[in-house]
Image (tube, rainbow, N blue to C red; front, top):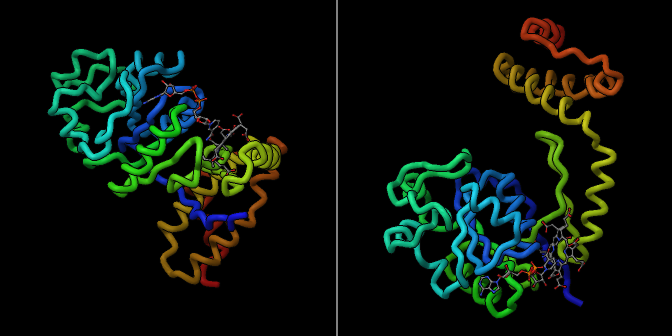
Length: 262
Ligand SMILES: C[C@@]1(CC(=O)O)c2cc3[nH]c(cc4nc(cc5[nH]c(cc(n2)[C@H]1CCC(=O)O)[C@@](C)(CC(=O)O)[C@@H]5CCC(=O)O)C(CC(=O)O)=C4CCC(=O)O)c(CCC(=O)O)c3CC(=O)O
Ligand SMILES: NC(=O)C1=CN([C@@H]2O[C@H](COP(=O)(O)OP(=O)(O)OC[C@H]3O[C@@H](n4cnc5c(N)ncnc54)[C@H](O)[C@@H]3O)[C@@H](O)[C@H]2O)C=CC1
């Protein structure tokens, strides 16, 4: 038995960064949905895709290259891909060569914008049904220093995906370090029952309060004390009992005053 890989859990800002998904089946579709939620620019290379992925491509919400993965796809920089005449904008959008944005989604950037992007993919997903292709994608990604996820044999890749629940700014992700994804999903659902919908407003309010405190309380010790008091507020209970009323700035100032100078 292998020892568990000590994976590093992080939160990655993927907004407007290009990510590549190789393959377009149900597994690829799930990974694509997470990438779109993270507001990444999604490029899919696959001869066939699911109906849902096709629809997203048609709407211009992702870029579909309708073909097999080719060795070298990852070594080509994105701007080079484009200047070689490969339309990475979308499989259907023949007008994108003009460099104008002709899509409905905020996610999708014009080709001109893409050429200003980093020259390599931020992340790569090898999610085809062909082990040899997935292995080639993994090898190439590692050659170029791009983090890669391999759907059929996670040990060939450099990162894996947790099961996730979101409550606005609160994100809980669960991994079994690859031992059993169904268990991850179950644990995430259990966390989701505990951290229910009320947490969204609670965390939003705490964000707003902390932001305000950071702006007006400059002494580090004093700030720390005020932030501890904020964390101890019974806002969540008030939300649960439908008694919570959002504070205005004046209320916050008044509340802070009582803890100042301590
Ligand atoms: C290592 C990892 C790498 C990665 O994909 O990132 C991986 C790998 C593999 N999954 C396999 C199978 C299944 N995966 C799922 C579901 C999910 N898989 C996810 C993550 C991960 N899966 C990573 C580890 C997560 C952890 O650490 O716990 C979730 C959590 C998140 C997500 O995919 O985004 C998502 C649930 C999300 C949700 O619903 O909330 C289901 C269930 C289903 O489809 O309904 C099955 C079928 C049942 C079964 O086989 O157990 C196989 C065998 C393939 C084969 O047999 O050919 C491999 C290959 C291998 O183990 O190497
Ligand atoms: N990591 C995970 O969460 C899970 C992984 N898997 C594994 O993931 C893999 C994919 O599973 P599914 O999506 O269900 O398969 P699928 O058969 O539905 O889809 C495979 C996709 O790969 C594409 N493809 C095939 N050859 C290609 C090539 N040379 N270049 C580019 N694309 C190519 C096909 O067009 C198709 O879109 C399988 O190996 C499966 O064992 C399965 C379940 C969960």
